[in-house]
Length: 297
Ligand code: C5P
Image 1 (cartoon, rainbow, N blue to C red):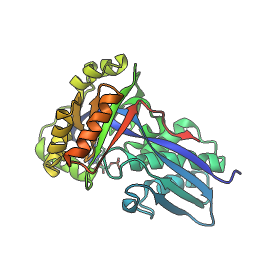
Image 2: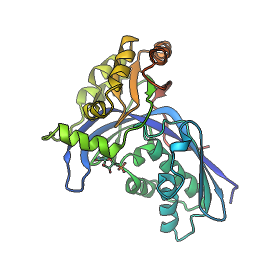
Image 3: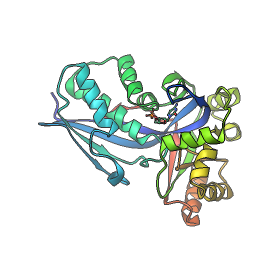
Image 4: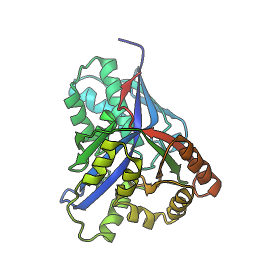
């Protein structure tokens, strides 16, 4: 057994997040077009006498270090399936904004699963790993597979999508977080009769063609009005990025991170500088997509 295993896992942005009405189980049916972006957390697992989790990096103080941490639950679920004790030290090196709507917690769960499978030699099939991911959370399967995918059901049923080029993004990290369940509740309040969600053929074509202008014209996030209602100052962030030349500006997932599509790397750097100078966000990060899913280092 090797001494430790490290897995790198990407953040995501939703280029389309179509949300239907609340289901009897409380979740919402989605047409969720995920795109993995090149901002990564790294999860390292090392054999230990008892389960332990540590975290470093921006926002690490907001990451729970108990069993509510999704990465801990991932290790426990895998261990339980194989009748072994989840005695590992999980270390999370965070670079994905915490509680930002970029699936950082989901990334850590997918990373912990792949890392523990390698450390313990449990040889779990990819299909079974994806099933465990779906049990952990709606966005976790996508963190495992990366690239681009259409998520249906509550977002966990994935169909891979072709992406015909590189897209350049800027992410404005807000001061503070938003609770995903609270954003969905606000969505329900604002949208009493949400239609059944459907993927946009024009958006899927824009991804396939690698066409940034066409993607900019088709990105949508049905959770955006709810996120703006709970976090009104995000309107200023969106306006600052648009004024700086972003092709599109939207809330990332349930927010409060905002995402800006740029024409190229130079334009992305300019938009990031303008966002920071505007004082409407805590920091801005530049990243490209698509990015690979969970990868053993
Ligand atoms: O699946 P996950 O644990 O990530 O979901 C977090 C919360 O987000 C859920 O408890 C629910 O309130 C909301 N959610 C939803 N519909 C989805 C996905 C998430 O209502 N499809």
